[in-house]
Image (cartoon, rainbow, N blue to C red; front, side, top):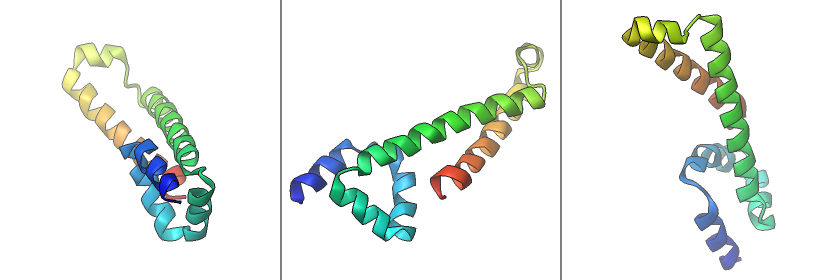
Amino acid sequence: MLSLLFRFFFSVKTNHSRHLRPLKRHHKVIYANLLTSGNLPEYLADIDRRAEEMFERLVKQLAARECVTEQLKTADPMAWVRKMNDIRNRAAEAVSSEIVCA
């Protein structure tokens, strides 16, 4: 059991902690099963991969919908940065509510 915990804590990335906290708090049985079976790092890596894919897809879709293009970037860089920051924040919030905390 100790070697399993040692292997787990050194194989988990730091950004997995945002997935791990809700799992520990709200799904204790699932967390314990994943931890004891040794599948927790793979589970967290899968969630992280899906979250990153969803985030990138949402950013592209929202940027296209709101006409945030390379032309805007060259014409008015500050407006482009403001809009992209807003889009990234909304995409991050959507990913967090749908994948990470689900």
